[in-house]
Amino acid sequence: MGPLAGIRIIEIEGLGPAPFAGMMFADMGAEVISITRKSAAVGKPVANTISERGKKSIAINLKDPRGIEAVLKLCESADALIEGFRPGVAERLGIGPDDCAARNPKMVYGRMTGWGQTGPMAHAAGHDINYISLSGALHAMGRDGDKPVPPLNLVGDFGGGGMFLAFGVVSAILEASRSGKGQVVDTSMVEGSAALMHMMYSFFNQNVWADKRGVNLLDTGAHFYETYETSDAKHISLGPIEPQFYHILKEKLELDDSFEPQMDSARWPELEEKLAAIIKTKTRDQWCELLEGTDACFAPILSMTEAPKHPHNVARNSFIEVNGEIQPGPAPKFSRTVPTVQAGAPRPGSHTDDILASLAGYDSDTLAALRADGVLT
Image 1: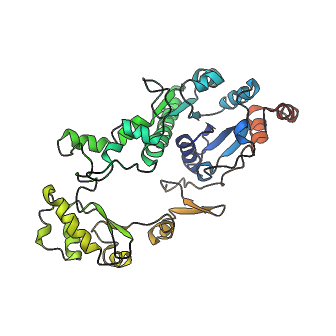
Image 2: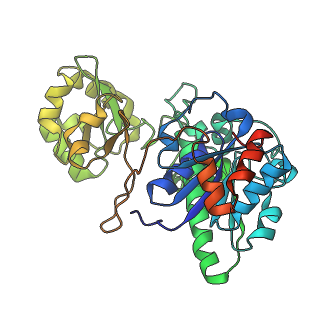
Image 3: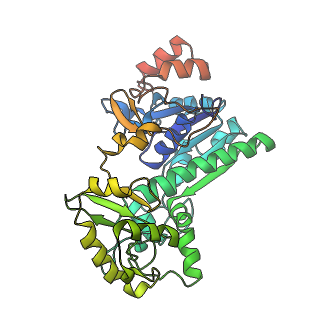
């Protein structure tokens, strides 16, 4: 069992970051009850099966007061509820923070939005690409002279969103264990992605980072912190920032003294061009044979098909198989309370009766009546 065994989380089904936070909780051993809205559950396959692993699923019509009552009953024994509605939607449904606190004052209420619960943009639609635009993160990503390149939806939805939601909720649960009082955790992807930029803002404040992409130490500006194409049209990454590691790279590649001084940024474009020509002389596997496992700060750039098969990832069980699907395993690792994926994604609504009977006290006749009236599926 993982370190969060004994914790119960109610998750209102949504997209992206909140379900990811729910997956993190489930991976760590928490009981996560995902509430699928009835209208969305009928005939609907699970879109992101990995994010639903280890959870229990119940299907409730949140437009019916009896469905709302069922949710509030579940909150009575929950440590936290997480939701990703636009501001004000949960309140209009009757499952906002005040509604839930009236049933369970100790319960933590985790909110996940792009812009945050307040502010002039709070009610506007948006996606990851928009939120990381406002934080300054997207502007910094890309090559010199080219437009910004979105980093998938890793920085807003998941890094700046779901992970900060999970961290905030766990922090509030710990505090509630001492104070006996729950609170609202207002997670904004703008603020989360801004926090991820803390080092760049620090460098910027020290005048060692230009407010321009593709010219700095970590944004492909430096020839020694770059990706390169190999002779077989594959790619490798290099990152020997420290002088002693850069020295090892020079030795391995037999680079001449023209590659010094390392930190002369005016020469980085020229040296990148020279280094690219050298890397293009060998295949990716040949570069792996020469550099992998050394302190040259090297790695092959692996595809999603290749990554689970790499010996290092295999040795650490970094990827696992669940119901025939290869997927990233729980992270991080623990020495004693070892997290395990208990099950794959459940069929939407498959735990409705069991959960409402055991946690909300509904008997079989009540469940049958609610199902007949369309409150449950």
